[in-house]
Image (cartoon, rainbow, N blue to C red; front, side, top):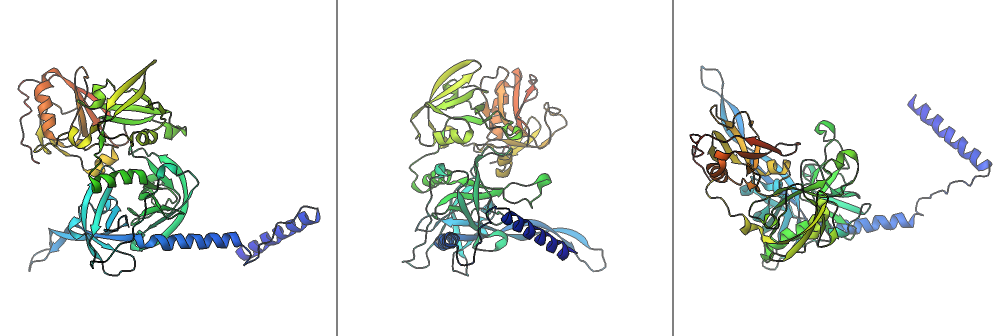
Length: 487
């Protein structure tokens, strides 16, 4: 029946074609095999690009320790469950970027498995041991290194292109090891620049290349063979349906180049203004419209932004006179400013236009590390630092945030918070700036100083706006020094 239907459809099309030809309409040009020089040339060019890029693409293998439950057998007794440890293999991809053997990949590919990290290079069957050089878990980026097996061995690095020049519609290739199938190549186009998704503040290149588990960390390359992005994730369909294809996301190569320069040259510290920003209006991705500006979601205390007078809900319209309409444009505009330079932001506050000069600070020195004070119990709240994936889910740009693991029955904050909440900042009752919570000690110190006057907790919850939760003045007997901290 199906064959008959197909034959009928073909005969109908053939009759329509004959009718159109008889009526004077020009027939469609026939394509003969072997007479498609442009298509053949494109095929050859694509194959040449792949051959050029593959020597710089690697497969990354790890084994993570996971808890397992195994039956314990004893003579004459029923089986009992006992806790044991097993190893779960994982695979990802990477790209060689220096002749000395430096490899870039995603941090989530190797996180928690550095002791089992190996890399397989193009044309080799036996893996090599790799070591971590440095990481940026907020960018989801890591640099590895493999040692040469002989004194004269040199690796085949790939070049990083200028991702600011990438445009929607450009053809691209994704290379990696999906499902542990090494040296897999898929092709597509750039379907969107500056793609934002609702669970992160990172801006990506969106591509139609097919992306699957194992592609993470692999290069997204142009038809010149240069890296324009690092494949990182794919958007899921409704109800987290992983079968949706053509919605891959890649970190732009310029973001990678900045981090790589910091790690390898140590000559360009990471810049810091103390601003948490978002696209405005915030629901643009729901309405289908494009963002119009950048809105300030938070201003860190004792930061350059606070010193310059910036406030929460300010609208950033320009950076040194350069119009910015999205967080992607905002970050690209800031990229060229080194630590110590001055930058002027043009903001709109209500009906008033304000210019704010800021001095760019060194990120690593602006917020001193808390040691000890990562985890602890404060006011009956069992707290620990947010993990990388939790910060990514909340779209946090800084290593801040405390997860509420449990709440004691007698906690004065019981009823305001719930288990799993992320405490991001705290502010006094007058909202005179916010204090980032990078550890339990920061929260304890603030509550000891300001708790008796009340204030606000800025709480993050996935897929919700940050909530400013007011708390009443605490009784002097509700001392925050009720738990020990650990690093």
